[in-house]
Picture 1 (cartoon, one colour):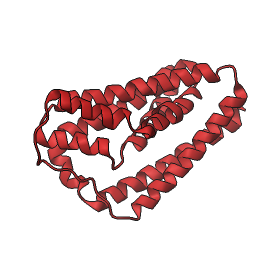
Picture 2 (tube, helix red, strand yellow):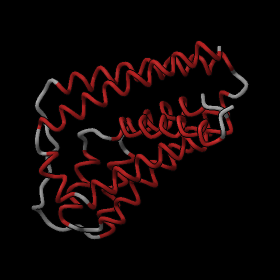
Picture 3 (spheres, rainbow, N blue to C red):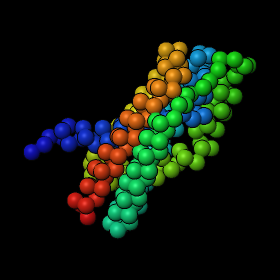
Picture 4 (tube, one colour):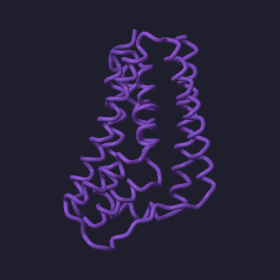
Length: 213
């Protein structure tokens, strides 16, 4: 019989890899965090805001979806299969990106930002992006809701750890990471890994649906 840690660990890793695969992409939010890191300007505040915003949305998504789907097995199955389809599509998109040369561009030039202005921009890049709600509330939420109720906290913890780790590395490691992220080859390798990971998660989710339902 598996002990609690052995049972919780795969759920934690599922949340971690899923959220990391979704968050690690070339985009305005990541470019902004990298820029602030390069300038060493309000880095802690920006990193905390982005990580906490993700954590709040993920938690709301998982718990809200679990509540909504708790007594509706048909809807839960449909949401799980829709999530699997999205993972398959997202993985395919990542593998397509891996065939192209792209890079995360930012600059240290321009005027400095006040704390208020930096937080306003962080909020805009985070909360005004419709994809953040699709990713955190709907996709991560619906997949997290498929986990056993007692283990949903582990899934949330893994997902939040991905955000905290990524934004911390991006903000505070900007001066070391910027040259790497400026190399198209690095993003091609990263997108390949993301694409394959998303397909594995898709397969595991479909298998879970078939076993449970």
